[in-house]
Length: 490
Image (cartoon, rainbow, N blue to C red; front, side):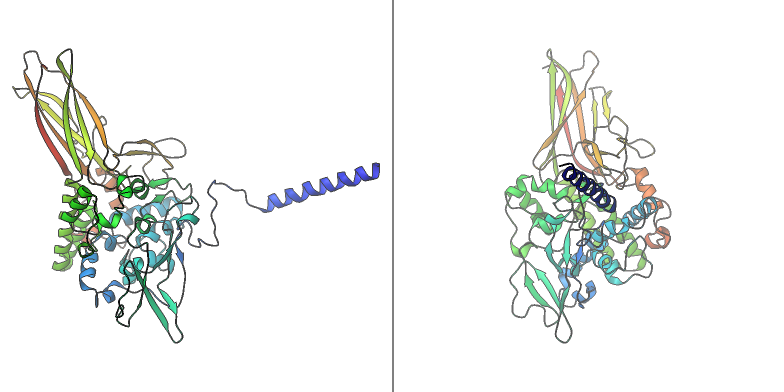
């Protein structure tokens, strides 16, 4: 009996030792989001490359058969995604702060083909191929063979969760294969490439992987444009990203108002969005290089972006009376046409705010809020509709490699609204007050933009390439304004 107990004790001890050795040999899980490193070889990018002997094709080659689509894309944000000086400054700062590995996290969505081939892993443009500089090019989107959204660490779209496969290994030579939403005609590809139909090229799921940006390590959603859409009435009505961003301005307005899909002939490769600053800077660069056509193309996209912003929202002004006397003004801001929150993307950097001014009959100011300070900054008490980021230490943060949560989130959901209240104190004898309200937008705080543009890599010269001798004052777009006269006595 004693010998039997001794054997049991020895076996138990051996099992404990074996478990301890196994635990010591296995790295501890530091995250609730384990990563499949065998699948995601470019981590922290979650892009997968099914490599064959087929290479990626530069956009100028595509232009030979698809001239209209090329010209539309050539003036788009997709074409500028990697050469964007603001992005280059941001990535340069990130690499210096965190290390070179984070470069793949950024570049896999800003120049996917060059990331998976190993040509690009950090900031800078020197010595890069046309495919790398083309950013999100024709061949990137049309070489997507499948989506990996359910296999990411967070089990939802994030950080480039696409599978790229530009072609197959043919019997004698590589065969290019391009994918799109329509059933291929017999002559599709003209002998240069084969064509295959997919079901996801007309769906928001295709856009999701790069417009759903998570923290490179903690997998917290820093940009949640896709999820904002997915939880909106637009998704319920089968209106996808492409139905608003791959059409001209009038078609966008019609789609958002009627919740009906555009006709096939109405789709374009504009990919137009609210980043009007990049359109403007790039138009200046094209003009400086002597490419007048490109400058004109980009300025048309700039104008389209501004018009899009000016059609996104509506304002309402409502007086609030207490004991028969005007006490407050309620301003309601409605998101009437954006299929995602307003604003979206990096909402802790974007700025959308109310500027309110009210005067009595004699012109005396009784409300003043939201005017920019002399240095271009917003006053601290302004009513903003964006997010405030914070790091793991729960302190305010703005850099995306630091932000792991939002301390406040004030963006406006699709077809939704947010209210702002402004107290009123008027002199005795005043009979009416004139209220003027503007909803204003700019891409970033002036000081933030200056820091990013000053951080561009050494091979980007703003004066030489963009004609910018000093950091310009960021343009502000007045999205909508409203004026109303209200009585002081009810």
